[in-house]
Length: 102
Image (tube, rainbow, N blue to C red; front, side, top):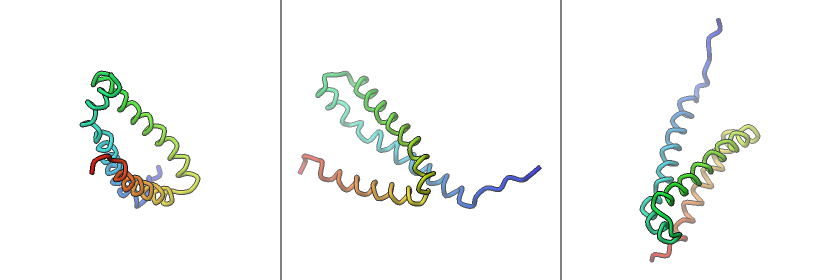
C-alpha cells in the first residue's frame, strides 16, 4: 500500500480559500441595507428582492468557480491569483466613483 504524499502548500491553499470565501460572503451580504430601497424602486417585496439578488450572486459565483478551474489549468495558479488580485483592487478602487454621495 502506497502512502499518500500531499503538496507542501496545501495549508496555504486551504487558508486562502477560507479567507476568499469569508470575504466573498461578506460582499454578498454587503448590500443588505439597500434591499428596502431596491424593493421600493422595483415595486417588489423584500423577500423577492433578497431572493433575486442572492440568486444572481450565487449563480455568478457558481459559474465563475467552474470557469476558474479551466483558466487555472490553462495559465497556472499563480498567474490567475495575480490577475484576480489586480482585478479585485481595481474594482474596489472604482467603487469609490460610483456613489452619488459627497
